[in-house]
Length: 530
RNA sequence: GGGGGCGUAACUCAAUCGGUAGAGUAGCGGGCUUUUAACCCGUAAGUUGAAGGUUCGAGUCCUUCCGCCCUCACCA
Image 1 (spheres, rainbow, N blue to C red):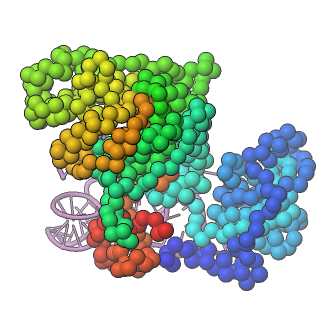
Image 2: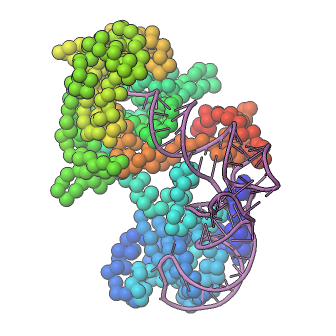
Image 3: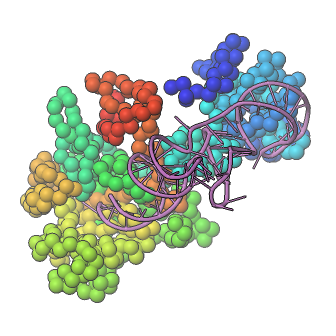
């Protein structure tokens, strides 16, 4: 652990304690004010003048010393203000403290608010306190952290050393809040459904598996909250939503993280057309929260070098027509589908509905999706690949489902929810027969039972919140909008070490040298320790 | 998993054809009472991701491994 602490700073810490100064006091000043507000107030004053008393707390990220005078840059969540500490204004012990200061320390300065001769808003200190001593230096002062891995790994340092990063994450939070506000305003009830699922379902994805000791049973981390939310529709809740962390045991890329945030919402007495309208409203509200509204009232996002107009309504295109436009023949044309699959190097799995339409969809993803910059709704998917969606009343070969594309990514997926219990059971059984590692291995009988009690006609939709945030915040990688993206455990930190025999604490692996850098995986055990 | 790129001080980065591993910031010591990336003097700092190989000599070339980034595959 010693390498976490800078030796010089440990010495400072000892010096502070020797002087009777507590480097980690329990209380902060009650009357502190945010730096940003103080700066705005000071700007109203004459340069070279001082006014009322003020207290500011923050992290020291800049220091310019002149012997008997020192300027500090104090940063708090939303701003930065300069503090000026002068020998003849501070008590001798307080001024002596400034000599034991390091960049990164958290401090409080009490003094008069004003402006310096050159007009810089400043708190002219009469009292100075250390609120928390930093034992590691902050990142480089004008480049900050640059290495993307380090930035994610040391997100805390990335955040405090870079106001832009902090602003981006605060905007992400605003986006999530905006989504929530729209739904609450529309009468949706926020709910929390289980994360531990005995049977996984609601999406096609490989799950994370875990084990419950007391019940001696395997459980899965949810890949989607869908089936529980629809049970609530059966329960008589007519509008529900959940901002759900979901887990998928799949690859990591600049738009995939093993755990991500999915907003799902369901409305009784509605269908997928209403979901499309709500999606437009949600995206627009989120865009406004991200500050994308222009002077002309349009919502414009810039993502990966391209501009997107997010002002509703968004175009609606039919899956079947897009397919035919791109490939030149209808998706029911078995011979030509088969030939196109060969041309694209995709496998032909047979004429049974499920494999056939899966292959058609592979073609669609290959030939159509790359061109979908969006925003656009793609409507009406082949029913065979939509086990949770209601067949279209016009043609049961097609399902009432849309996907919403933006920035070249799939951002939302919605159905008129299938509520026919017998049909649902058959669909589940087909899936299980398929033996695809990414489809559920067993039928969720309890869900079928819930449907058997009667679920109202309903529309439902899931939105990938992180991907939406990417587009709205102009982030090229999902890692830039995740507070703590998934990372391989750091060697030597004990995180990837062998799990202890019991379920005891973390085995601090002092290791060093040839340490057993074994892959030993075991991120499982890193889960919540209660 | 395939292809490509990268890995040098705590941070941000240099190092010509294979020829003594450097700078700025941060740190430490000193000076300085109005600065804005303050400045000045001094000082410390490295298993060049790891292991092997070629060579008189390797940060640089070769092999293997580890990690990260991009890309493809994968990912309703």
